[in-house]
Length: 123
Image 1 (cartoon, rainbow, N blue to C red):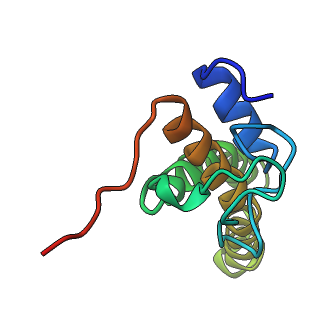
Image 2 (cartoon, rainbow, N blue to C red; image 1 turned 30 degrees about the vertical axis):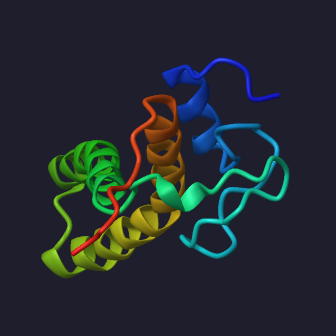
């Protein structure tokens, strides 16, 4: 089931919150806690570094979707600042909370496809 390691396969499986190796096991055991090992193929998913890149991806995607909507609504209706804050701040927070697991999954899949492993911390 593992097959060839391609970036497209890894990112697609990770984005669907599945193990990038087999595509069947669930990637997380909590909101962002990686499963170790995979319930289907036994792969240790914690060896793939996915700490810093997912938040950057999340902010990038949320910003590119929400900012044009914000600017359009501001230009079209010119609502007061408190209305803008009441709408766009919670919407941005919600978008980031929803997108973050998908971006972390895609990052794990990308690391899996490139065989990028977490460095051991030996002192």
